[in-house]
Length: 197
Length: 197
Image (cartoon, rainbow over the protein chains, first blue to last red):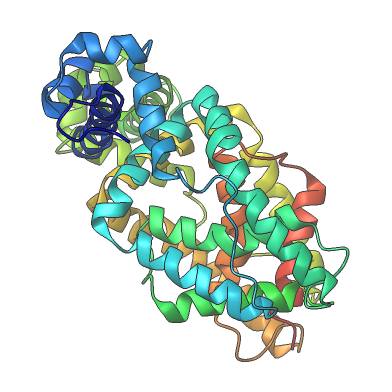
């Protein structure tokens, strides 16, 4: 058993790591990528610069990991599967719309999007490390809907995900319309009509 | 009749105006909004700074007009109307996909998108001055399709446009898939299935 009176270096390291990643994400939301420095991340996190350089080779690496940390625990992420594809997608899309409508949540994702749009290498890294694993979890749920006869067996699942998510993504990025539960539901219904069996 | 030997001040002004707008658009693609200055636009256009200040109050105003100039002649823009909504939308979407696949065309639009995403005021200006007039032209074509029984009479036309264009927009911004004629056709077919009468 761990003696609670003794300092635990592993736990302290984990605390520092989390503080650094939180600081990186906060600063990129507040200042934008170009103005964030290793120094400012260290100061916000309350650690020395050397602590950051011990774990990460560059500013880009810290910032990218700070976004990866957002989806930690989503490894092996699964969508709800009650047997009703429409109901399950509505649950997921309503939660997603609520996140994008929340200023605290959306600010760092917006900052990351601006970087990705301007930087093809970062875009590729984003696709491989962040987008693809999440997309695979979504496709697994769509496949079970195909087996249940709730989605066309020959539907192109990449296109299904684009039709479901891209309108929300664009509306959020351009602030071109309200992000509501009704909108989440409308996207699910539209997508299922387009790819009905 | 105009004497061709005499200088024509109106024509010279128009040439300078076009040179300034072209320079602004080129520079924003090359450098990004933050690094473009009135001085650099003037130098690229081969005019004096005062010429720019005579016509525009600020850098933002010049740059915005440079994008508006892209859609000049689209005032009273109309989509083709052969009576076949699917064929007409495929014509339009194939042309749009080809534009986004063209590096010379897409670079300034990408730079503008990054500005819009980060700046709510610019996003509102973009919607009012650039996006809305074009969307209205597209909706006019959709309405004639509704009258012809080729699109559900109660379809939400804003949602129809989002489902048609947002997947392309996202795929282009994130460079997440090929921009091909087949993709253009698939988006039209998917959208018309989703909103069939």
